[in-house]
Image (cartoon, rainbow, N blue to C red):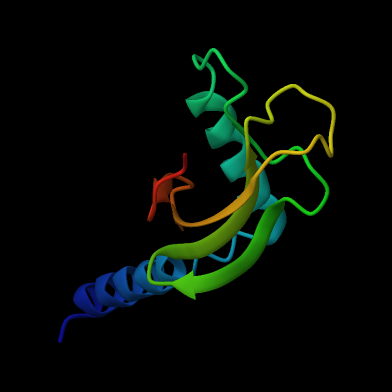
Amino acid sequence: MPVKSIIATAVALGLMFLFLFAPWLTSENIHKIVENDLKKRNGEIIDYGVSMNCDGCGVKQVKNNAFGKDVVIEYIAGGGPLPPNTKFERRQIEIFVSFLGTVHELGHLY
C-alpha cells in the first residue's frame, strides 16, 4: 500500500474520530451556544418568549452522542427580560448540539 494512501487514511480516521467526540463542546460552550440560539429564536416574539434567566435553569445534563452532544436544558416560558425568579412554568427539553455548534430540537420548545 502506498505511503500517501496510508497517510490520507490516517488523517481521515483522525478527523472522523475528532468530530465524533467533539471535545471542544464543553458544558460552558454548550450553555453559551444554547442561550444564543434561544435569544436568536425569540428576537421577533412580542411576548416574553423563552429564557434560561432563572435560578437553576440552563444545561442540566450533557451526554456524548455521535458527532455532537445530547443536552437537557431547563428553561422558563415567558421569562424574557423580566427579573430572575419571576414565577413562570419551568420546562425541560432535550436538544442536540452538533460538532459544528448548531442546535437541533428533539422536542417542541414552546
